[in-house]
Image 1: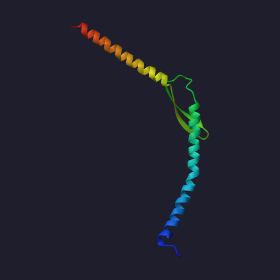
Image 2: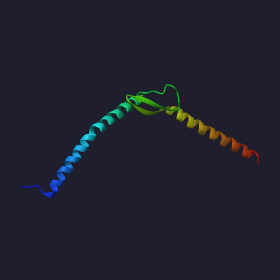
Image 3: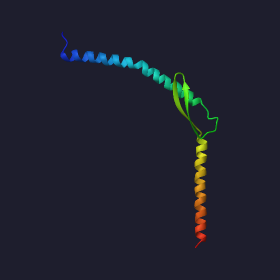
Length: 101
């Protein structure tokens, strides 16, 4: 039983694809492990400085990880303050425009 032309072409192609994906598996696994390590490390960092936002680059093993410190409570309070100030200005403006007539 001989091999057909299709199988003569398909078998080396499949083996080549298998070899290529096997060669890429280790670097991808190392990158995934490195990313998981960085995510676990950055999730443990606390914002002790009290910044609303602060950008930093963290060195982890042999690579740099960009990280942004945030304080969600300060952001919510800042938005609330902004809304309150706008409301006060509108009320003051409406009150003064009504007395001018």
